[in-house]
Image (tube, rainbow, N blue to C red):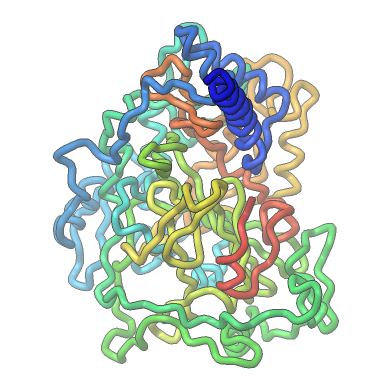
Length: 568
């Protein structure tokens, strides 16, 4: 009996030690971005914020934090549906939010400005669904037509609850967190035209929701941002790309023609054996089509061929009142990166064994198309703290009317809005597919129909952050002094009055990590229920030489390679 009890005691002790070691070191091993010294200090302060001694000890030694707060975190409150039930309801929702006066006989929106507002607040970029250009005498650069011709089409998840939002509307519901008493104050109206002034404040600034996000206010969902349904979208798209196209050899990321477009900027121009020869006005349509088809095997885009009766007909399909943000970055020598940023007011995290992790207020996702002399070469898709880059021929395409080039089709995951090249399940970080994103062929969003558009000089942008007083702030001397002028971002000629100050805001676009004392917060094995809001597009490595955002990311030449690889 004593021998059996002794063995049981040894076993329990060993199991306890093993469990503590696993729970302590496994999250650190699985974390693709390990914390630095400052983050570890913040973590100790976060643990100490709990008023309960037992909670602090269990959190510190077992990794189980705020377990008394754990409950089911539903995407919506009872009684809320997905939103408008018909296309007519959708148009009424759009009209209410955007100030649309009417819809013409061709289905295009007729916009009217509300009193005291600028047109960019309601219809930035293209003011109607026909892509009409604004006339201006300003010497601003237009968005090249080839950028719009190859803009992505985004399948949002069919069961999504948090739809594309307008960042101008988002900041109207934001305040600033008072570090002393934890309250949210709003002494000054926040707007996109003056947001960078917050950089003068000490420490990191967090735009903080004036509402309890768990009350699910409507601006958080923006159901009016659900894209207008495609008339010919029957849901039977299929991937007909060129999945077998690979670059032979030991280094498949290097093209065999010697052109290093995949790793270039103004200081490192691409190597080219033969300089491209194009007619005046850019690459010929014939050459552009040839590239999109691939070198040897035809690429069959998804979707049907438009009939003659459909040509030249305005089409509102895919329109969302949540504008995207297009930022064009000239890397020199014919290399142009077109960053498409997608903003959502809320990121709903994924669940593991019914427990939700990773919620945060404000969500910036993006994809980037790299062009070489007007020809699309590759696309990067952001996923959480990383992403994947695909060669252009590997991507799914959709046929466009009027003989325009087929456009790439990508997928936004439910809740997290991470970007993927295929529908289905996408596990990440945790083993055994415990944590995964899900995508499907839900509403198809055309961000080219409604977006802010800008040109960004990344060399000037790097100089703007160099300051004797702070390497992260353009403010010199006394914070009350006027800030150094920002010149790196300018609006495109398509929307000459678009604000630029928001781009230079260096704080978070959502709440800071909720404390352990907050009833909404928990953390299990290093994964938080609520994490900090994201930084803005300026901090997404727009100056990158490679298509990829991180060193771990490599160019993928087929969808199959993408399904086998991971960003972490």
